[in-house]
Image (cartoon, rainbow, N blue to C red):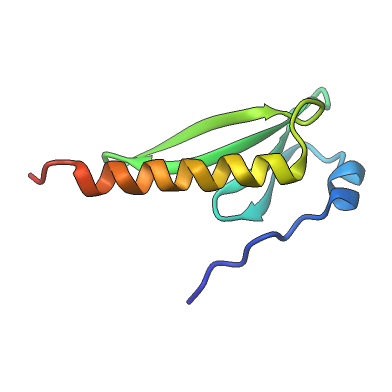
Length: 87
């Protein structure tokens, strides 16, 4: 089953105010802090642990740019998994 991607729109992002993580799909989230700070977050697993990678503040990084950065991060994570030595 394919993951749903590109759930958010630029208009939706501009209107979101509720603190929390709002998914766009493909492990990309808009993170809104309790004080209203907004940033992009990419989440992945490495060595069995969940990791988070910041992709930039909303004011500096558009939705389209965050999607591009997340795509690049997905490739890097996948390449790392293929080149990791097995147990």
